[in-house]
Amino acid sequence: MLSRGPQDGGVRGTGVVPARAARRDAGAEVDRVAAAAERLAALLSAGLAPGPAWANVDVGVDPDAGRRVGRAARRQAHRESADAEVARAAASAAAEGAPVAAAMERVRAHRPDASPAWSTLAAAWAVADAAGAPLAGCLAMLAGALRDEAQLRRESSAALAGPAASARLVAALPVIAIAFGMLLGFDTAGVLLGSPMGVACLVLGSALLWTGARWSRSLVARAAVAQPAAGIDLELLAVALSSGASLARAQALVADALEAHLPGLATSDAAGPVLRLAEHAGAPVAGLLRAEAARVRGAARAEGAMRAAALGVRLMIPLGCCVMPAFVLLGVAPLLISVVTGTLGGAA
Image (cartoon, rainbow, N blue to C red; front, side, top):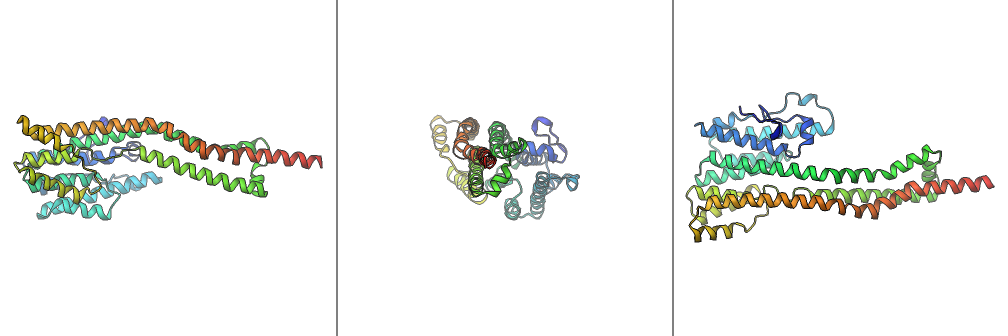
């Protein structure tokens, strides 16, 4: 079996990432599929048929999965189990001569926790199979594209980690203020629960805090990777054309594969200028398409970095509109009410 070092996401032997590492690695699930594509390419290049090649690709469950604790670890174990089920379905279909891509999608339909990158592999397999292109070369291309996507996800996750952590810390300020008031000897909890004005502060402050938290999570989610598998439509068109298919047939094959396996992918019109350039210059169109796909992935990486940089500023909006008013209602107002109540009660 092939192995990869820590720089490739820590996948070795079976391609399984330990639970603790996977929680930190946003590209681990894409890397697992990339490792499977690499191994398939190597085995097919060595002369194995698709059935035996798939049978020798192991993306199985970590033997220690049953002993994992924690919600995140259990989710990771479920993902690994779903990935293994997709690989087994592909191996069974290849051995029986059935459509491999369709078998992968059937498993993905009822196991949505499997890596979405399997749909990308299914689309590439479908195009290469229908066009008669060499599967090994197609899978090697796909593995490189998936490596790029995994790196894009890691870079995006790393860039978003700071703003996201700041948002979580700021959202905890009202709760910290309540605890701090009680530590100083003020009956902040009693005020919030035992007086009409305190209850009003509690309800309004909690609503603002919930709204701010949801707003911040929404901003972070929108700043994450926007277009998975960037440039994959160009890569698939290059695969179809490299098999000798006509341009119209190649475009039809790619369109059918994307509709069947990646319906949510926003296809671009980047292929048009590349095809015109290849026609006028007489240059190999497949190479130009792959170069354009690499440019699209680079642009997606730069766009992700810009979104992450803007996130730090955008998070100030829910902070000012929701979290800080909640801090006043839940932390400052109970202190003032407690002081005023205590002063008036002492004077009486």
